[in-house]
Image 1 (tube, rainbow, N blue to C red):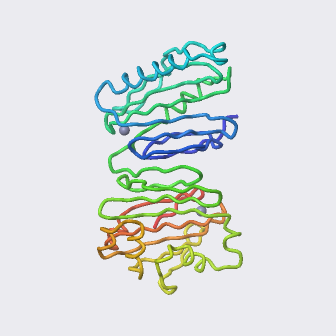
Image 2 (image 1 turned 30 degrees about the horizontal axis):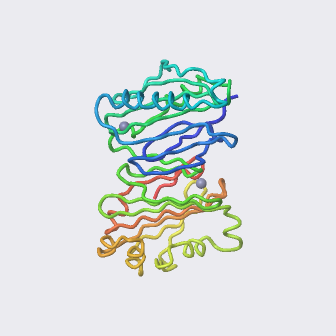
Length: 316
Ligand SMILES: [Zn+2]
Ligand SMILES: [Zn+2]
């Protein structure tokens, strides 16, 4: 039986991947970067991206990739004995207008289906290597993965999808990921949007350990950044599809100092507001917090986001 899949999302790249596949290495930003995705035993997918302009961006990237392959083969070693010549072939995948791709397969110590994809709308080129244990190439899986590959949301104002290490959420498409931290029990992603908006998405767990006998409000106030003081009476409690949700919207004391510390001087000088939502998701046994900082409350509320902490979404 095929593995269940999830929607991987990173810098507007989205891909349907088997559930156990998660990044083992991730670097760069929305312009240029690299992600290696492993299945727990071996690397299964490598994704590299960079800026590229023009109609021949795909062919050019493909030529470059083929040249690198030949050079690697020339260096030989044990892998060369089993190497099957790189062979361009048609995977028969249809990608949306503006996205062009070329595919090649090769075998060495692993089997690989590689694709270069260029998008004239984003002016980006991506290189994918889908890897299989030697002799176990599954073209159907490679086809499914490439078919699901997108490098921009469907319409210009559709939200961007983020799906990594069980962080699954949508942000306005113009928010840029500026920093992230992933560790056992803690994940945080920080965004900057137009108009001086900053947004932090945090996931912590396991919830029962973090909460112990503590009330959710105590935990929420304690997890806010040190210099952001929200009075207890400003916190409202509600329920969204079984998750207990806390929300606070105001101009907290100390916010300017906190933002200056984060090097956001120009933002800190303006009137600043915080809209924050935190909740306990018993079904995933996780605690979530989203903090949106903006010059005005309207601007903070405008940034539409949605978090899928379990199968259903929590919205502000
Ligand atoms: Zn694109
Ligand atoms: Zn939930």
